[in-house]
Amino acid sequence: MNFFSLCFQSSDYEPSLPVTEKSNPLTRDIDRASPSGIVGMLEACDAQMFQRETGTNYQRLFDDQVVTTLTEVAKRVELILKDPQDSLVVLSGCGTSGRLAFFISRFNEALKQLNRTLVYSYIIAGGDRVLFIGVSCGLSAPFVAGQLDFCLQHPEVYTPVLLGFNPTHQARDEPIPGCTFTFRSVAQRLQELAQRRKAFLINPAVGPEAISGSSRMKGGSATKIVLEVVFLLYINKGIAASKKTSCLLHSGILQHMREYERAVEMTYQHREGIAALVEAAGRSLQNEGGVCYLGWGPMAFLGLMDASECNPTFGAGERKKRWRGFIRGGYKDLNNNEGPLSSLGPDFCIAHEDFLHQVLPSLTDRDTVLLIYTQSDDLHEVVNLGRKVREKTSNIHAVHHRTDSVEALQQVTFLSFGCFFFKLSGQAETECEGALLKAIYRADKLTEEITSCDITAHTQVARSAKKVVPLALVSLLTGCSLKQVESPLAPSVCECVRARGNGPCDYKALWVLNRTIQVSATSTSTISSNACAV
Image (cartoon, rainbow, N blue to C red; front, side, top):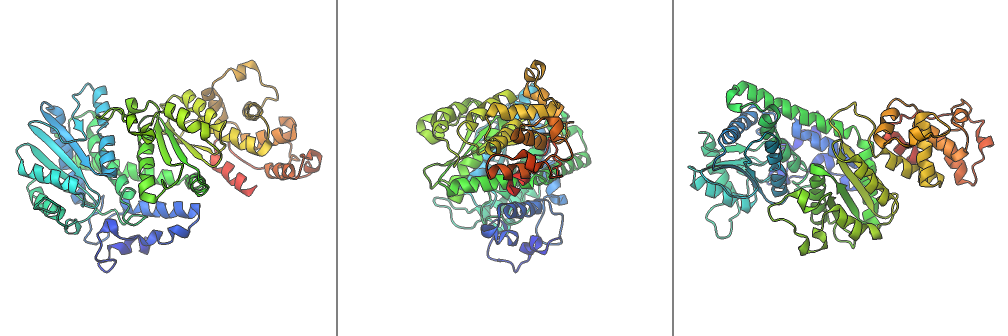
């Protein structure tokens, strides 16, 4: 295990700072790193969330005591789900924690599908029985401390739960104006009640943040993991937790956390693509451009949350064009308690229609646009919006969340490939897409049967096709048939592009080159590497 990933646990390492405020040795040079270096550092930093026991005084996410506490909280949630009359599960927090509280409260949608009473809320409210979960990553937010203090004063109604990522003795101890308590004193009172299961304290250490003190990063991820693990026990199985033994619940929680660990590992398997996005966004900000997230469903809210916090946290908003997020149906899809907030100003206009009217007309290649969608979203709508964006800028990317590793080629591949071809070949968009389809179907002439198919059908065929990208691009640049391009004597992609960069493509001169590039139709990372090489 990397020494630097553990040294923060030493009592001698920045002893005056709580864990969430310490600098992380793993990211000490992040300000000088390349995009790929930044992603590598973030990967190592995120891996700290899942480190097992290391013989220190810090609890970790997989520690038995933490999992046992989560088991007990899951039982309390189940009691409320079984008898929801005048009962609520209330989630509260400030900043990122509050936004995640709102996001997690969307578990009500899953309850609707199960024909259950809605019990989740992200504000203080309730009746006879309330499970109150206060989230403060650094155990520091006065807003949460005040609410927990209120809960502690009314144990007949409230069962308080505190979620954070510092030991109790590192909770903020500064006086809170107008109050007789500090966050630390509240946490200590809660810790005492936790021994009798009258309250619950969940505070595993997940290590210092990649950017010191920015607990919206790893702290935000750990918050989402912990809360979803607790709530998923019932939603996924539909079986009353009270009917399960504590041993089964304990193992269920561990299983869910391992799945999240695997999800993080799988995410960083795409480190080259992530690095390309980091570089694109950085270049946009350096050139006084903006970054926009266009999302669908729950993933869109995560984009909104990230966009809202990049401006104040990292200074990304000190520009004419800001970091912004948009969700398909605006506030209708967001379903927040306050309703539409568009009257507060342009930055509060968050629907795709707002993007089309406010942002798209002034979009240039200095801006970066990221599409965020899942396999269950309307893929035709994703592609149509992507086409409109591509008419204004070639700097468009896509993040596709999928749950099946053998799922077909990402649907927006045509957007990325088409844009790539357009930039390298100078051909019209229709010519670029036609070349892709010819390479997928191995047809020098597109029939009506092919052109009438939708993108889903094309991607299903592309799954088994070989060398789609190089064949299409070389054919496009040389004007030769696919049969000629597949010849062992055919030029490579790089040679074609280099020749074009020096003037009209001399195909006969290139024909003597005996090198082809093996690229899978489903590998977007290879596209990026070829583009960089060119």
